Image 1 (tube, rainbow, N blue to C red):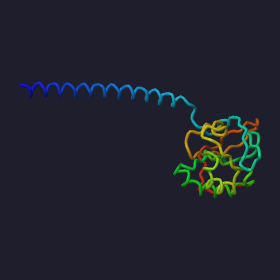
Image 2: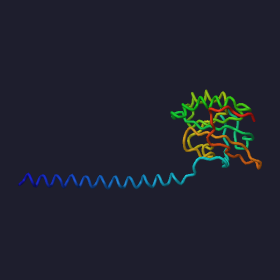
Image 3: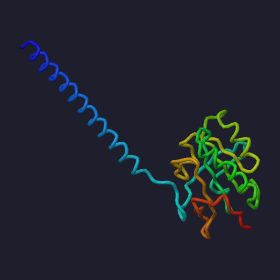
Image 4: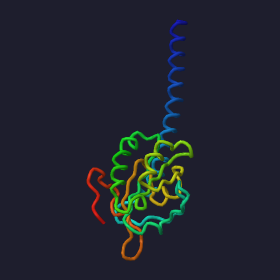
Length: 179
């Protein structure tokens, strides 16, 4: 009989622990659901035809860069040094940017990293683009509403002077058209 009582008490304790853990998991799932719902309300990256938001930054070479500097078709790329897809796409971006009419004045490369963590990317991109180093929530990332890396855009001003995204997925394997 004492063995039966011990077994029933043990089963009761195990069920109580299971109940507490289940309540904790349910609470955590509710928190995650709320977080995901909040993320879903954020504006997605800019798409074709949408206007680029205002920004004012300094390029790595020290020159100012604002939305008003984008007066002709411009290639804009966002990269993060700790992103494996960024490393894979970087060579194609550099080749494409090297063929852009107007040279590096018509290419902007944004490296989302702390100063000093951008070495390899800056060295490769500075040959073909004006490079801006900012954190993931910097002015350029906010203007383009970038949420993932790499993100690439072709932008150009319209007849009214607004800078619009002409494509949010430039095909880097194709030759650049002559402007």
